[in-house]
Length: 328
Image (cartoon, rainbow, N blue to C red; front, side):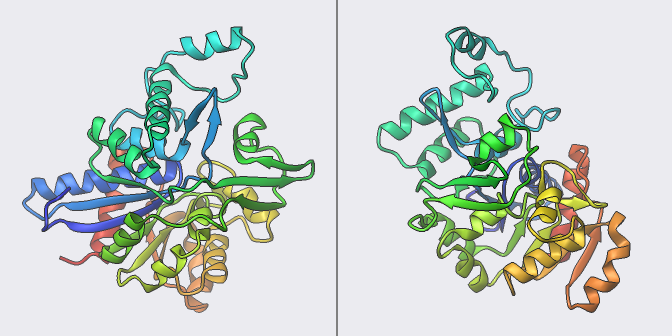
């Protein structure tokens, strides 16, 4: 990762969609090195608005999903946690009467214990994330979007609830009427995040939820300005394919918050909410019919296979993005 000749790529990521594309970039980097081409100095800026405290531990779901995926430890069937996990600790907590709605496996629990220890010892989240990632030999620099506490909250017909209450405990069944981020006004991007954006040769907005993942990153004071001023091209991959989110509630949020549940709806959201941010939008080939109207409106588009079912799919998408936007 310290190779001065490596090409500098930054991914803005939420959970599993961001993790998969980040992994694709890491695989593409290894393939480039194997054929004698410069590898990638990959940095992943990760949403922390979903973080929470459980059982006295600081849990960072998006950071952990990206870390486990890049380390080759992720449970690809669930999209969260560690594969081949055991559940003795959470089962025992349940016997003691603790809430068990948020599943924490035994090995996953070790991550949260160690993170919490280091934070209580006075380190910030950026430092702690770097140490955890190094221990797992993650082939990228993991950067939490901020070291300050930000917590995403959702307004439903029943009132305001914490994001994980909505997402996990209530299974994303509530209609989302509004999103707010507690602490965002006083939070700031870390110096590492700002320096990484300024130094990037390519910035990729992963196919993560544009409201509660990418939207939370972009809501940080100073972060959007840094991206708008960055010299690197910015490419955004749609998380909606064929009118459906591949994972999570992005399609339903688009509809409930006044947009359209489609790849075009994603493009319109980014262009209206963040004018001038994205240079090129990557849509899946399934959404070919949406291209003419979007191009007529001035959007620049790439059509690629974006559904990442296998590791090969992840690498192929990353390679295609690199080939189109990071010339040798």
